[in-house]
Length: 267
Image (cartoon, rainbow, N blue to C red; front, side, top):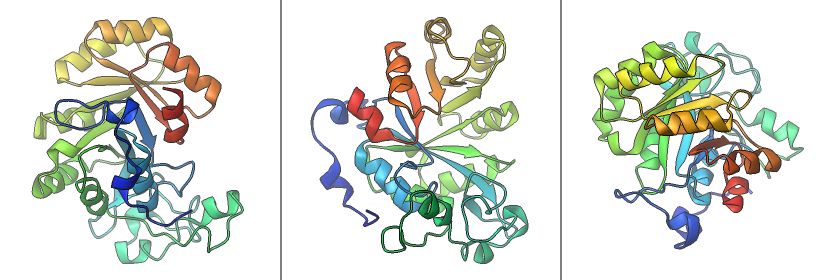
């Protein structure tokens, strides 16, 4: 299951997989949440490679800074939920963090053996960006879990990766900083149970590209309002087939899911 499969052999040349924008990147509205995290350990290189292989147009991940200033890819501020030891990410060096097997929880929950699900280490953001830059189908949406936007933008510019990346989060300070430092990079602003009319004004003022709402508050009327205002409408994080069908019926532009292949099969 966890062999790395050549990406190009898994991308089909027709149907939804061939729907692309003018730059050649896919445009199917499927964001692989923490990579293909329903089938691989979240926020690991195999999860991101699989997300590309199945044909998601965006891969989403979370970043924090380690004690020695490395941009590391992990959702939580501690490693205990996913790993075999519990370290505080911002107070640990990357050398210490890389010793944690972040596939531990996935292996236990899915009753996998080590042969089925080998040990995995926490990747650096640079490694994931470099992986994404080997192709021009899927892009990477970065969610900063602390004030590390400047460091991430510096890395992106050094790699020349602006075409391959976007940012998503609900923190207005972080997302506005993206536009200040790199206005060409798209921002998907996460919102919850807030004043949508006010959010649309703020999003326009900052030059954001999309509003992504929590599934508990997104309605067909809100989708219409967002789209009529000139933004993409998104929703997170949807996994059940019935819910996927419901939001597809609403014509949501972007759906975040742990099971991108499941969503793509419904399109």
